Amino acid sequence: MRIALVSEHASPLAVLGGEDAGGQNVHVDALARGLAARGHDVVVHTRRDNPDLPEFVELTKGVTVHHVDAGPAKPVPKDEFGPFLPQFAAELTKQWEKQRPDIVHAHFWMSGVVSLQGAEQFEIPSAITFHALGVVKKRHQAEADTSPDTRIPAERQLLRRMTRVIATCSDEVRELLELGGDESRIDVVPCGVDSTAFQPAKKGESDVLPSERQERHRIISLSRLVPRKGVGEVIEMLKYLDDVELTVAGGPSADQLDDDKEVRRLRELADKHGVADRVTFVGAVDREHIPELLAETDLAVVLPWYEPFGIVPLEVMACGKPLVGSAVGGLLDSVTDGETGLLVPPRKPQKAAAAVRMLLDDPELRAKMGRAARRKVEELYDWKRVCEATEAVYEDMLAGSSQQKVSVGTAG
Image (cartoon, rainbow, N blue to C red; front, side, top):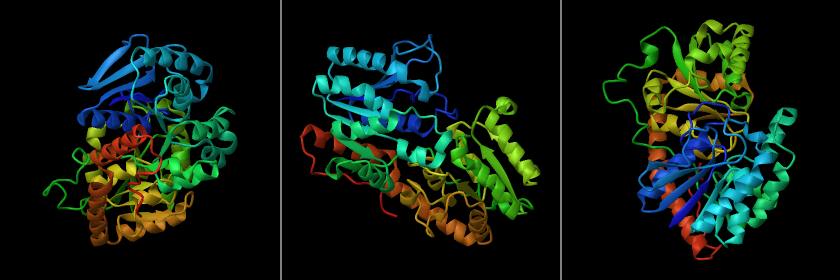
């Protein structure tokens, strides 16, 4: 198959950790590589944000990144892309007129908008993975939501006009149905994790638990540093846990932490709650170093206000670590409460602290949950499995059927 992945703001070549660079970049990168490894020809269309970028870049054998000229060739917050969407759509249409893809798979609502013109003109089967929904963001962020007013109406239209919708979790299906989605055209394929790159520490590296090497337990928060990710709640949680220190990984590089607005807010919060001496910010961490960082911790804490899916929990689980997470979005599928980790209500630091305390006081339970987490990742969330499931949706679309639904990774 010739497959066009459209990811207008999230390039697989982007450096992770910025406000608009996170799970979607990882998803598109891994999906493109996985589909190419299965013999497909993949082009990822993304907006040019640097004048020095060539129009086409080979990411790996079988995967080309196409930098689309739409707006200024510089970074622009995704919520300000609106004026550039018609140009992006026109450029895509020109490209697909030269070489028609067999399948178009848009990632995020704006990618869906720019894909419709060419997909409908050339009668190309089209799918969309929203990665996040405007109604959910508006519900949780209210006035802080910077999404354009056109977002929710556009998402409703995409639900009607795209051939298929590929949701990432069962909670998203519920939201899509409430938006007016057609259940017969919705498939569930989760995000994934590279279970070969993310593995438990080798025998000998973790024979001594981190908490036995020091007076304090050590926990970690891994995420982009934006308020909705709940790092503030993780910091507040520390006031209920006197013997715990926290490593915050994510955000800008270590040498830019002092200039970052969100880091300053979080540091002020740590001061307010009297825990600043137990919080360490390490900045952006290369993905290849995450397993060794996790190996030095007792557990991870992931407390988003809402989460369309959440790749970090999978990375934690793949490394054989239990986690305490918010009972929201994709975590309801990926974390089996009481077996691979513990789920707590969002924005309730005291309840999160109680869950953390329970795990810290029971090393055997932590180890048991870590082993179960690893098994679940291998069975449901390895990228090879995710790419196979996505390919099955594409084949079904080409066959013109809306009956053979795919549903992966939705078991609790």
